Length: 232
Image (tube, rainbow, N blue to C red):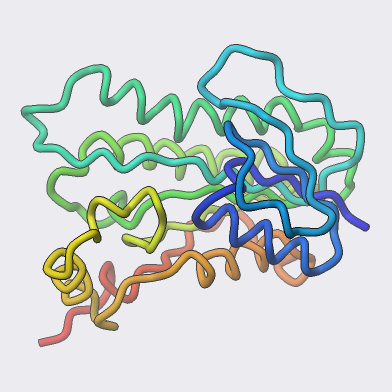
């Protein structure tokens, strides 16, 4: 039984990933601020932790074969209305939290001998989208971190990043909570729908697995084609 660590594994993509790993019979340790949605899952351990806090990381003695950092923010505002605090919060959650987690559990990842880390970005980093200045800046840093760590940690630790477009998650609810908003978002995608947490989690689970053993340093877009094709 392998040990996997999912940060933010109680909702959205993180929860779906936790479910997938649990079904495979592996041990899944979930770090999150609140314990929820995990009651019926087997082989899942919960450790309460806030990535923006100052408390020491919970100690984990076992080798970690896969680590997924799922916390994120959606802070969409016109550039002129963004405050320094907006940028600081987005960097704290998306970049600095990931740095803290990876640095803290690096010995566990190394002791596994052949492990994998998955981070999350957004399609808005490589495709300019209005009102995304703060979050795109923070996620752009995550993409830079991904490539740097993939180079630095190879060959023993693979590091990849998933860049979705808007996805059905509790975090995105305010952007999709009306039929008109949902329809407008769907129509922007060539596939005429938006993604769901389960399909993003499937990719994350694959990247954490040995089946993705020849993949590292990649930013993989899962965006319904919005970043690369246009229907005329």
